[in-house]
Every structure is written in structure tokens, then in C-alpha cells.
Length: 334
Image 1 (cartoon, rainbow, N blue to C red):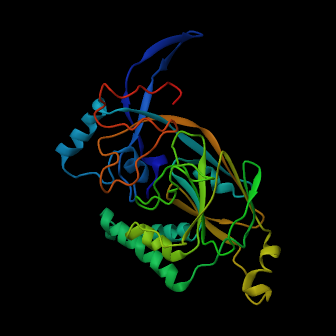
Image 2: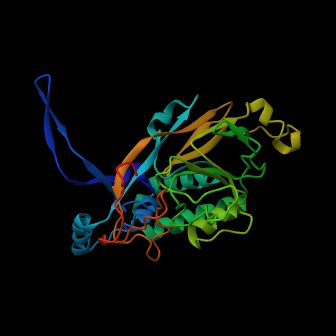
Image 3: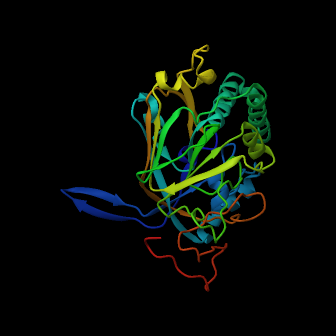
């Protein structure tokens, strides 16, 4: 899978086990911790937690990475989110989000990439080629032109309050971790921002932003930079609802309301890099917190080329590897 924390999560350690009897049956209660190994293309989740952005083919290095689990610092419970479509029946395949959910041009680039990789699997044998191909499809959409999704969105609700979406938005992204598009940090607000907070993976909130330029996507994929004005921060919240216009309403916006071109009834979406096409006629998309999973910080967290490190809501715990005795202990609810 491409950059999918949902499918690349691997149960990495099981600290203890106990047996409990219930109605004559023995139930296994296993405290666990999940760690994503970098087996995809972008590997944003693996990078922010410190387990690398690529997996070395050297078996010795792989063994050392697995052995480092016993030495790693205790991490937080990472939020897990649900994505629910009102009409799109196939959404049951993509109903859990750990990294991000998006609709628009970036998801279309992901779908083009995946279609090409499926049709020519022998070409896609390295992460480097995958990333170059991803950037090429982003550049193709920039040259060809990609329609704005801002006009298709009737209303964006964050915790029950309506948030304006720019009409020229090319993609709308709901972000759970600080990293997006192969290690970039689109949500960078600083400590003294009057409205927004820095993102944390255990704060029970997601960050909502949009890309106003398809070229911004190509730069995010390749140069790990953001064009000035290309990213617009919209909101932070616990419950997100995206309501799409009915097709007859949106068609009035097409071609300046001339009605000369038949509007495309479909849009592209993606959950943790798994892309799909869906009908957007009157669609309603809800993003809500499903729970959390315990994880650990790895040896590469915060190091060069790993992307922005995952942060915790308490703000004072900056885990290093291995953990030193002077560091505070995380509470069970962290």
C-alpha cells in the first residue's frame, strides 16, 4: 500500500499476557504496542514516530531495528479516526484513518499513480521511483489543470461551527499527524498563534487545511517545501463534517454558470494514501474519533529527513532514544 499507516501497522511487541476465565472459556488479555514499519512509499506515520522512512535491505540493520523496540521510549496513545460517507457504499474499505483524509487534486494524483503502478508493476520496485512517479503525476495535473473543489463544498462544519473554504481550493485535507506528503509540515503555527495550536497525535483533534495550488502538491512531494499562499489553515476540531452540493447546484458554478460543459459527478478521495473515486452528488462526509492505539517512539524520531516529530498534548515530553532516567513518566491516559 502507498503510505498507509492503517495497513502497515505491525504488532511489534507484547509485554505481558494473562489468562482470565469467563463462562468456562479462557480469554487472553495482552497489553500491546503497535509500531509502523516503513514498507510503503511516503511512510509519514513511521517517520514521525521515529521508525524510519525506508527499510534497509540489509538484514543486520533490520534486526537491529526490531531489537531496538526493547530499548525505545514509551510513547503516547495515537488517535485513530473514522471516516463515514452518507452515500458511498464502498467506503467501508477505507473507514479508518491514522494519518490523513483528503479529497481533491492530491487524491487524484494518488489514484493516477496507483493505476499506473498496478498496470506496470515491474517499474515500481523502489521507493525512489515511486516518489518520482508521484511527482510526475502531480506535475501532469498542474500542466493539464485541476478543477477546484471549493465550489463543490456546500458547507464545512468543525465542531458544529461553519468554516469557510476558499472557492479556489484544489484539495481539502484532514490531518492527524504533523507530517504530510512525504515528510512536510503543512501545519506550522508556532507557540503564539492567536487561534491555532501545534498538532499533537494524542490531543483528540485533527487539523483541517486546504491546498490552493496543484503546484503546491508537486513541491510537497519533491522539494518538501510549500509555496507562499499555497496552504491555507482552516480549523482544528474533534468532529468534522463536509457537505457537498447537489449536482444541479454545483453545475451552475461550472464554466461561470454557462452550463456549456457537463460537470463530472465524481471526486477523488484518499485515506492514508489509499485512493478511490466517489460520487459527490449531495454527499456528506463525517470524520470522527474512534479511539486510540498505544505506540512507541523509535530511534530516528526528530532526526534529519524523518519529517516533523510526533508531539504530545502535554508538550513537555520530548522523548529521546533510549529513554533517560531524568525524563518524566507518561501518565496512563497520555
